[in-house]
Image (tube, rainbow, N blue to C red; front, side, top):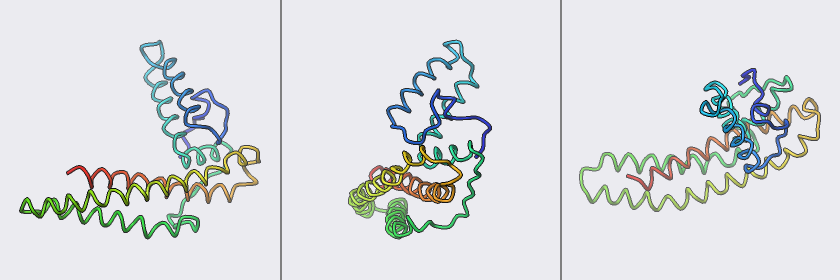
Length: 188
């Protein structure tokens, strides 16, 4: 997604991948105060700040944007990267189970069947929390290379960085799907 704008610049930041959520939030808050229409900014400027924050909050989108700023186009072919391949089965099984429980709950004709489905959903929540934790740990481990990337020529790490974008994209997507499944499993 090349937008023609530099999200780092929109938030008044250096083009660095290795940044903490706190640093990102501080820059976002500062720019929001400046760009807000009530403070003399424009709606377009405020929207640009919000989009920049959204993009840079995601490690996958941040890395993709950083590469694109250096003229490196990231193409995803949809195939599962080897670095995350072993996680697909367990995540998919949890999502499938959550979907089946939700379906049973929706189609329940009696309070007993509905209650049994609710109990299964609540039981599933613990396993979903554990799986989300594992995904978050994997994301953190992968993001640990951002410091090295910041010190490197983007064209020299191009292939590694593009593979990392793909891996992070899958992990972030699965984490979001598990978050939604967790909410669904406990909130009927």
